[in-house]
Amino acid sequence: MLALASALHLTRTLDASPARILRTLAVGLFCAAGLVLHAAPSHAADGPAPAKANAAAQPGGRIVDIAQVEAAIARGAIVWDVRSADDYKRGHLPGAINFGDAGKVLRDEQREDFLPTAAIAKAFGDAGLDPRQEVVVYGGRGNAYAYFGGYAVRYFGGRNVSVFHDGFEGWQEAGKPVSTESHQRPKIALTLAPNPAIAATTDEVVKRFNAPGVQVLDVRTRKEFSGDDIRAIRGGHIPGAISIPVEQNWQDPEAPQKLAKKEAANTAGLALKDRSALEALYKDLDRNKETIVYCQSGVRASETAAVLETLGFKEVKVYDSSWLGWAAKLSAPVENETFLNVGALTGQLNAQINALKRRVDELEKQLAKK
Image (tube, rainbow, N blue to C red; front, side):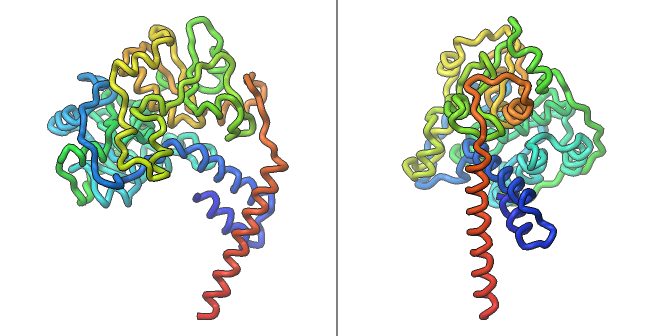
């Protein structure tokens, strides 16, 4: 939506070329489409469901339940709320810090890659988020950005990081105290360095995707995997990749659609499946192999990567650039390869630009009359 707003602004300036406008709108549309699965509703419609312990979580595991969160808080752990500032103001875990939506404060909105390391270090330092300390990350129930936040802390040096999957809704439903007061930690000076052991680059995946000791897991939707839903310059998947969409980790994979249609009263369906169900879901994967997980831009992949680590997979890596990086490297092979119909997209974008311009003109006329 920010990219769309920027493009609309460009239409009102003299130096905005059509090509620039179309490019900005296209990125905005791809970003909006790619994040649909991550946008968990911020509240229940008709009241909370009874809280249940997260059976997938184990002591010391990557995914934790309420009791483990409370124990971590008692130990003095940093609790990071990755939701928007507005959601945080409406209510959060006592003592939790927040410095905005993790998807926006950590990533370049155009490329969907991490911001420069120095910028991340400043964001963490200003918030007092020290990766060397114990960190618990949460968002809305089932929201992959909590996992992405946890992955970011680990990627920049954190060694004791966990994710509270049930998030704010789970905390509320358990009757735990909620705060609306902003909590500030003292600022610290940080120098961060990426940890390549938990990540994979496009060049690395190109070299290793078909190696005997490597398995590649695609956690996008079935239509993205098949090439029917194109969210980059090309559609399809990495040859040999195994398709297990991230929503299969949840109690009800259809929960986002049901919530959008108001067919579900709350976010209970976004709760993580119990351990036995998750074991069954990933039974055909070899937990002793190197497992490279990818999605559209690394966010959904970070959730499944954490699930696999909780289940005991030995070497799990997030392919951070994911499909955006793979599709853009035209020499990288693609199975079920399809290409974006630029002509059709241009027509759609032109129509949207014209509609937006007409709407702005109408609003300006209405304001002029007042």
